[in-house]
Image 1 (tube, rainbow, N blue to C red):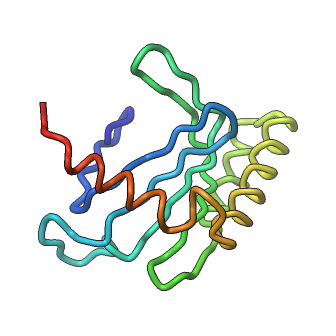
Image 2: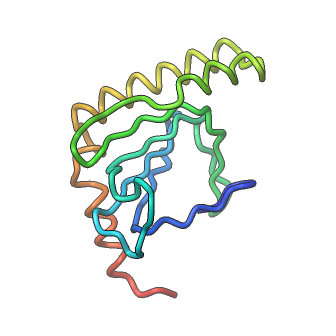
Length: 140
């Protein structure tokens, strides 16, 4: 995965959901590590949802602004919001408009409730089924 200034090479398969509506990007991770890992938490996260501006599609490119808040569910079922401190700091530093703060907070609350309750697509079925389908496809 690449974004300006960051390139992430995950040692496990994953699939990301960029919704047509809503301010988030959800990533679902495979249980199996595809490469050896030293000293990290890879493999411990099942679902990682970035709270963002609503994703915008232009052809095959999607873009969204990451608003720091993240909803995470570990493989042992613990669900939490991460980086609330960064969101608070950045909303002041970058003078986030009040409507953006409200939208991000509402999106975070809704996603947190859905992830914790395992509502679709966070049900533990959707992500693995897409990973299985995509891994079965021949690489072009």
